[in-house]
Length: 455
Figure 1 (cartoon, rainbow, N blue to C red):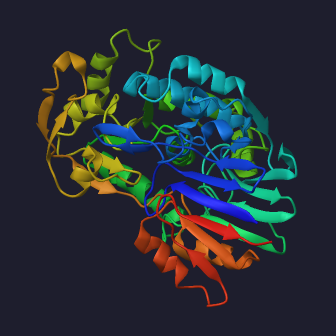
Figure 2: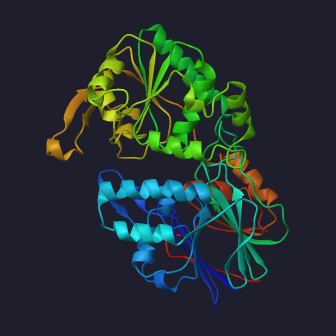
Figure 3: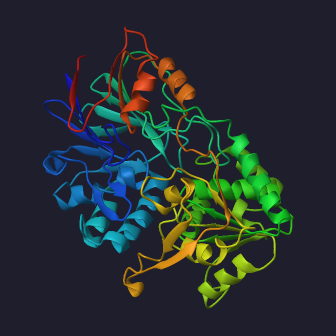
């Protein structure tokens, strides 16, 4: 008998952690932190007590709500292997270092981080690898971000499938997710992030944001696109590259986006990204989409004083597009662009991702127009700078997660009678749950709930 305990992402999004165990073996799938605006991060409850007794850890992808607490396992004495894909390791190294700058060693230290990196073993998709005696795993391309994986466990003859975060739509960099075409999967542990909504075909938001940029330019405005550094940023770059190649538009890239671009460059092969984007780059004689001449990285090679240069490009009457972190407008270079560009009615702030409640991004999407910038800066002693947003604000329906109908279709195609829904609010899981007949058993766990899965 196998026991499954959900320690995080239960009736919530954040701090994903799922323990699979029997009397001899304990394997942890993901171990993240819940990020809260202007508040400390929260770990999965109960993980600390089991860290030393784990026989293996498997990470689905690098996003911090899945990876951020893994170095704490090492701090608590976990000495075993941490399994992930090759790009995921490189991305984690960047995200973990960045987290130390933001939150310090509240959960783990720099030494813990380096020890964790040493304990990592990397794997390719579609190749089985050993986790413990009698337990193997296979990664499937999840289509979510670079290196993201769903996980199929063969647990001593019993099959368990963990989706992680999946995208059922093809994006510029990634094809839609893959999943096992096998019989007799004992249980599927699935995300249901978008269980309450169906999203339009991906081309619709692609075209919508391009049209908005053209309309803004006709009014002599600048388009400011707050973006997530990992995944969404590269997707937007590819959309802009396809549309504005050879044009007089200039696309300025700023913030942590630049570090992630370099990792995408390192893994820009047919194994990790879609052949479609590889062929497009080959046809245009470039290595990656953001190598086009009108894509300009904001670094010290372009100006000694970047803040002065940021002010210039956001106020000059030229066809400029600014793509910068942070995606929820909580910090980073984006505050400089908002300071000088958000007060001008001809400009556009193009929101390209989900905005968590309590963030500046969420507040302006909800209609707030008086916001405070730079209040995270120690130099300003928390006072910040208040501005009134006069620029147009639009949100575009991009998502890195499976939309409702496609998720249900995938789950029905997988031959299983048991489902556990995680990484969602309860209402989203209930919306998906009601699509299955009574012969199927499904669970919507709260944190700490356990389920026994019979052979």
